[in-house]
Image 1 (cartoon, rainbow, N blue to C red):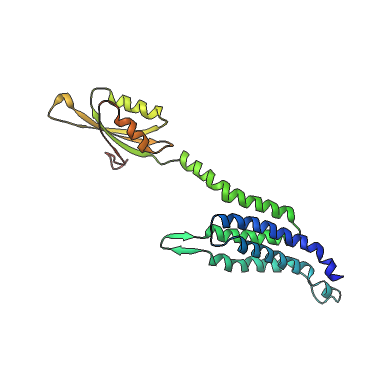
Image 2: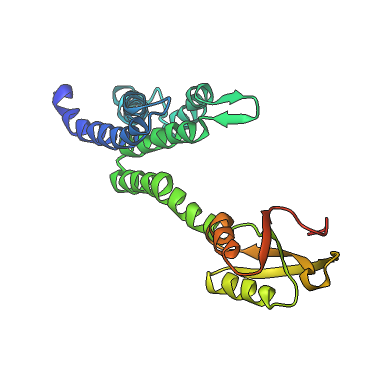
Length: 235
């Protein structure tokens, strides 16, 4: 009879296996150090610990010889999973690898604990949050980096007195670039008719500045261009 009474618990254990495998599958596809098998075993193991803590000592309660406290087992799972997570983190020179995978193993243990506690909806929501973070966040960060691209300095030499600078600024703004600042210095030459000037533009935009350089070079009166060089060191 005791064996038949354990059958409903298999649903919670199977749910932990399902959610843990889904999270592990994502890591497996990305070829991370801990894949589908590791995550599945961690999730099922955590769920089993919780189930044993909740139902494994029922016979002892009959004689009032033990007081069950499932939270004690949960605390031990949280501290014990740190050993697995720590083994997934690698430090090579200044690069740290495996932090996300270690955090994923930690989360999958929590998902298994939730399944073992009967909190299936909470476990499902946490699994969905995992995919939101590991798939949605990189896309969001990519958009933020594009919108917050650091200003770039473009140095342009041009023939002075022919309206070249006006054409350059018009081209920059029409191409989606914002001119943050500019500084002009004059370069005197022997020929007064061919006096040149050099302007340092500090630009902010969402596309690589190299694409803009090609367009500026085609403007009449532009002598030379350079990226990343400014007249003023304080630029």
